[in-house]
Length: 351
Image (cartoon, rainbow, N blue to C red; front, side):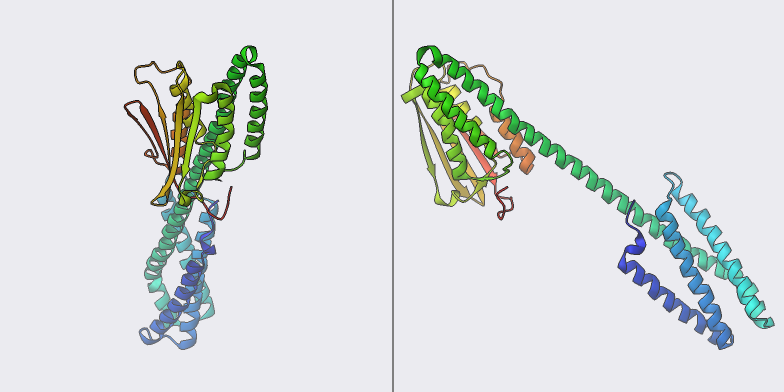
């Protein structure tokens, strides 16, 4: 149910002021123009104007409880006509019972059409205003419900993407452990321990929406330690961060799919050593993170789920509503991934 129009303070004051003003104008018009006695004029004015104001209040109250879905205007016209007819008849009967003055009774009889038309215009105007108010309130509530539904859908999809990341990485790690068990069992045990630490750290930040860049790099290092058990000296990283970027925040677990992608394209099906370069800087109140890795442009891409970069692009779009926050570029044998993170979060909160 929409908020009642009478709860609007401005509308209430407008109704009270209009009633007061029209009561005075109506009384002085009767006194000065039609030469009606003061007592009769003021009584007539109070009865007509105050009762008309009450009719308008009744229209506001009734329309707050019942508004037809179809034929609103026709319903409103008929409803206001009936109320105005009742108001005109009741006021005419009451003032004639109170004042048995022939001249005044003659005046009130011939004034019935004019009073009916003016009263109908006022009551109908209030009814139209009330209907438009409630229609606006309904649209605002419908829009709020739609926005809330969309927000919940975005949060659910973001949560799903974050939940998908761990099984994706876990399956790859288990495959790596399986490959090491027979050949290098000691390293397989070491990798299991590191994987346990990594997953334990993941659970601690499950509810975090934003983390500082150094925390993300530290978290990424746990992942790299796991991969270095498998690839040994063939995998190395070079990380640089500007001081201004260290205080900036980003969604957690955003870099892991990029680095995983770099390892897949740089180390799979080759015995060469590679260095993954990670750099971060601040520009225009936006965090820029660049990941570069060598790859063989002539080598066929390894089979995979295609989850990595797609998930990053989707997460950034859901968070910021922009399609330009993830850029990729291949120049020679260097593949570059650039992530831009606008700093639009509440900086007073870490969650």
